[in-house]
View 1 (cartoon, rainbow, N blue to C red):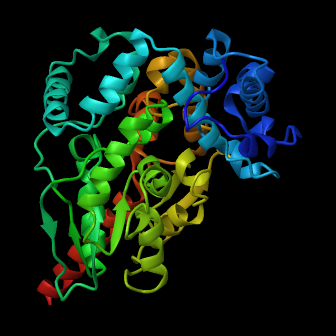
View 2: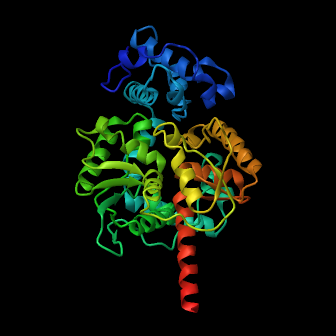
Length: 414
């Protein structure tokens, strides 16, 4: 049986691959295994073979597609401009359609019904906070224990959903902030920093009540109907804003691709928080903070660097905050988090996470900056408290707030 869904990889997408192999050194799973089937070229050849009826959507095809991290590092170096991420999502949509299984049904339930439900996420967050306070994380199953150990301290914050923040003067525009499925509950301080910085720049920031999960994880796992439903909900929720902003790189990359999932996509432009804040600093709407605050190691989330091709923005933000950015990985290999990958392929995820942590530790920096929640959790888990982890905008907001407080104190003393 060949492909049966409208999301399947197309002849045009697959024929763009000239099988040059330039992608292979940039693929983390190929570098770990050396297997052609674990690299982009081999996966594309398998997709083409199914399209031609030479292969079927069988267990071997499932293994090859499921082992991919979808980091899209191959896209950034591909001379044929193969849309590998789109092809991989299509291949997984075929797996969802042709090889239904209990495991895939459970994942579909979690990604399509649990993550978008704020009440269920709230219950999960409460449970996780209890486990944290009682120090019971070591009792969790292995695949869950590692990401759990990478979580920030939970509880004690008011949600931003349904609220807005106003600048001191008349706003220059309205930004709609994506709360995210777990960002608001698990990474609230990042939202606090993002909203603080954007209001300081003169924007009104609103966090619409009607929004939901961006749908990236559902799309990556092949659940197309769920992905479209979530995209439609968010398009309606953000209909009245000037800009849609996310402070999670994986979410932003998916939001920028909404025109594939829902007719017309967003009416407003989508920007990653790092992208917008760096621009506001460059244009003078946000200041360069005086002072020298030491070094920061920079970890590039795959969906910021490879999918969105945003590399200078996080470094510019850190420099403007008085930090010296340190490079740790010229190849920017995936840290191994990759959404739910750390649960599905824990051994590979652990190996990649350990390598990334080693690079961070080797930098000698006291803090590492990462602009994606999954990457942050992976880093926290493997660094085990040896180095702090923070979002670049979080570090800028901290420096800006300290500078303002210092200035205010000096003025009061006079």
